[in-house]
Image (cartoon, rainbow, N blue to C red; front, side):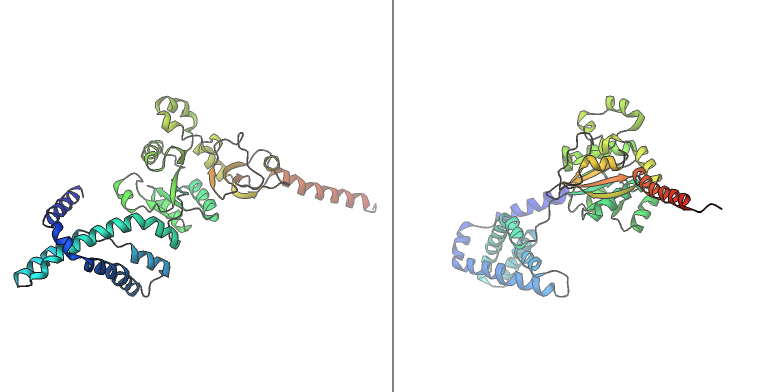
Amino acid sequence: ESLSVLLISALFIILAARVEFAAIAELGWGLVAVLAILMLIARPASIFLSAIGTTLNWREKLYLSWIAPRGIVAAAVSALFAFQLERIGYESAGVLVPLVFMLIITTVTLQSLTARPVAKLLGVQEPPAHGFLILGANPVARLVAQALKKHDIPTMLTDTNWENVRQARMENLPVYFGNPVSEHAAKHMDLTGIGNLLILSPYKQMNSLATYHFLDWFGDDSVFGLVEGDQDQRARLQTAGKVQRTRGLFDGVSYAKLASLVSQGYTVKTTQLSEEFSYQQFLNQYQNQALVLFVRDSRDHIHPVKDMETLEPGDDWVLISLVPPQPQKERRDREEPASEKGDKTASGAAPA
């Protein structure tokens, strides 16, 4: 790949060296007319015709019509055509090369500078990368991915365990089978809309490797990992501070603890806070057994929770939490009416 870039760059220099400024100046207004026809008529016509039968809407077709810079293929072919045409007697064929190079310069410069504004104007700009790449496709990771999916948050699971990958696919979750830091993953793992990393894997070496790798991709504030359990104290002494700051996800629980809660039947529940139902009331309802995983703020942004004690959600926020299968308070509320009914029946019964 590096060699091809070098060769293409050298070819551009060689071909451009044959172009004279005087030849470009001689083109005059004819150059402007040709550029306008190619960019505003020929390209849109080819896009709209070739897109017949596709699912592209008119905005996407229009954007494709505008983003069409020419490159080395056009330059090389034009030089070859000009040489062959001049050889068989077409004296004006010499204008072909400067014309094509001006087309390349114009399209690359103009369309590159206007690509983002045009995409925004047409409403086809890629949304902010607020999704999550989840390291692991185990039951814990799949449960978290399903919770995020219900809130329309893009997710991508990745695991080297085929059984975990198979289960994720059966649950209709996007998953990549392989090493997420490999060259193959860089080429084939679709991270569209994803700008965060959640490390929910029991493999400590892979966790550290992925942390180092994706810190450069996503940034310091977008990589989240679990603590290392009983060995976390020793790990802190051996881990760079930059990596250590990513740990402590989900109130500092370990993967083993999360897996244990899931195996006990804990489920993910979404709770809408309000003035009538505060965060403290939520904690009291589950007698502090609930584990808040994410919060969704008033701007519809999802944030992973690190410390529940310092968490101060607003009245209109949404909590995504791991809750017990049957909260003790609800069980007690159901048992008390039943006991009272039984007492009334016993007291009202006629003696035998």
